[in-house]
Image (cartoon, rainbow, N blue to C red; front, side):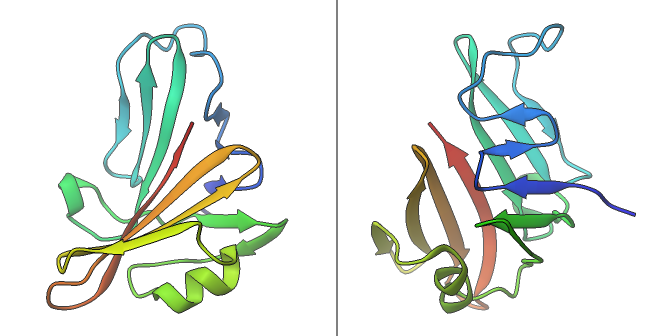
Length: 133
């Protein structure tokens, strides 16, 4: 059973929290788990972002098969999750854009910026969610 959960409410994935200091023994390099569909990104001495991929093959990642928790409710998003589905879960975005290749909805929760990106040139797919400070 897969127990991966991207917790939007507190900005965590596993034991990693966006904005937190780098865990002991972690090093100063970004940590990508291509097979599990996520990466933990480092800037200076802290975790600057947590990235989860929903489209198989995007930047060589497999698709994330974990859940996403928003407002203490679990959701199972996937590459077919639409903009309307995400807005129904997250609420109205603070900003959006669409350049004809990608569509973005940006949200903010508890001081965490949440970027949700879809590929829209051809078959529309949810590419990723990134939590950033």
